[in-house]
Amino acid sequence: MTDTPAQASPGTLLFIDDEENILSALRRLFRPLGYRILIANSAIDGLKVMEKEEVDLIICDMRMPQMNGDAFLAQAAENWPDTMRILLTGYADISSTIAAINEGSIYSYISKPWNDDDIKISVQRALDQRAMKAERLELMVLINQQNEELTRLNATLEKKVTERTDKLQATMGQLEVTHESLKRNYTDSIKAFSNIIAFRGGSAPGHARRVADMGYKLAMSMGMTKPEARNVLFAGLLNDIGRIGLPDHLIARPFETLSDEEQAVIISHNQMAEGLLMALDLLQVAATFICARYERYDGSGVPHGLKVDEIPLGAAILSVVDDYDALQKGGLFEGLMTAAEAKAFIVEHQGSRYSPQVVTAFVKYLTIEGSRSHKTVQYVVADELEPGMVLGKDVATTGGMVLLAKGHRLDAILIDKIRHLAHITENSTGVYIEMED
Image (cartoon, rainbow, N blue to C red):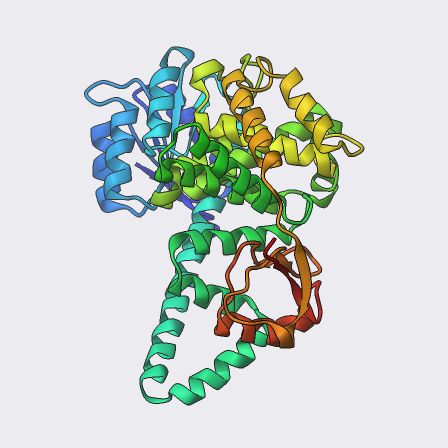
């Protein structure tokens, strides 16, 4: 059955429930908003509708005869992956709902009885995410076309491409970052996206890089495999992606100084970040870490009140290293703490905010890092750089975007880039190089 308003529809919604009163209530709620509405009384009927109609979003009840909602949405996800999926569920179905979320078959769930404003906001956010995904796919198609064009030019006009690349390198604009992400490995691409996110503000320059680096090393020290630790690295780099959609007055203030309502907005964008990243297979685990970043060991956290071992280890690690850096940079409370004070805060709150297991490993990690001899660094002007030199400090723009990370070994190509890009870096005529003791 379909209900099509006269005005242009902002999207097509499919409601599936075996209770007619639920379908009627949903139709009454969304009809005035201009949506094209389809309904089905069972999951089987819902599949038939999906085969005939193009649907933007499904709202499906959990408990239905013949086929439950989670099974239906899993099948819908396989056959129509671009359609957003929301599950209507009761309290007794929460474990099945969480399983459906973890398996990626639903975008979110809504508890019955629902709040009208909440369900309308959830639907709009889901449709906004679908639109963003479509825009991202269009951008990737454009990027691929541009890369193919550059490849063809390279085969016959290598000199011309080299000259054009030199000009692009002088500005390090978005096209250059995108082009490099196609030539480098997946980790380099994530680092590039993290740099773009940093331009939105709300955290100290280099915060994401420091959190990602500490999180990766701590995860490895706790026995994680490299692929597992890499998920922590990705989560650290992309932890602030949800802040892109936040108003300026929220991201400019430390988290603990916000009201409960304002903190809830911040946390909701962590959940939105999870939804955005879930579309990328290699980032699904990192996405769950980001969503659980505000969970607390004692169960007092959000959004799901997870506790102890229910919290993914990667999320527990992210919580510790993220707060440790934020305490020193002003992202958590008013005022700045020293490294020792930040460490003491983390230790004091183990068992409540933080996992004791992670805190113990983190304190050991800090001790080891502090005992290592630090190499001296020396400022070297660009014209005196030589291949084989190792960066002693990050090379960053004045806005805090890291272009080359500390520890990177220079080659002739990178040295040439540094000379071309010197005018947009904090170190306008050179860089800091590690010196042998």
